Image (cartoon, rainbow, N blue to C red):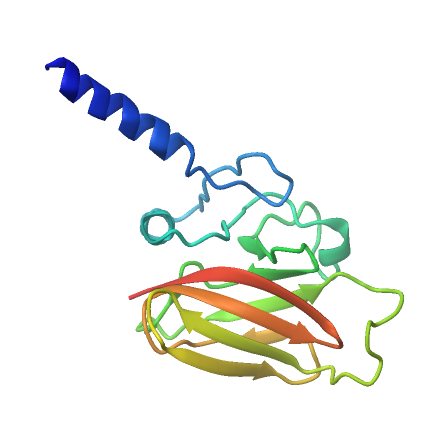
Length: 181
């Protein structure tokens, strides 16, 4: 390999190193893993899609934070995604999320908001409003979770990286979720 080829290789490595995403705590997050082989392969595919599309929110499999683990027993380790501000977490009971689920399961997401002592706007509706935009397109859909953050089935019309703008009780946050085919 000539010096030009080595320079291209080194430049590529440096460029890729600068694209590493981090977990909500600022440290690199571990790759998502699951028990079932088929789920692991699907999760790896979803994580690869996340990296390929530049989808920014990483699926984590460590313990849920104390403020989000009510109703779970022991050391709850389920796939989850934090909002950019850390004010909400999406607990993914179906991972990876899919555009079409042929196995009879659902895209079940439990939305857990960090408890706030006061709402920024007490007159704001409690409903969780999700405005989802498909990365790289003009496709935009709105989903609502009545009563605010809680259990939901969130289906989106296409596979890909979706940027979610979340709004509830005067609070806002954002996250990216990948939906596989």
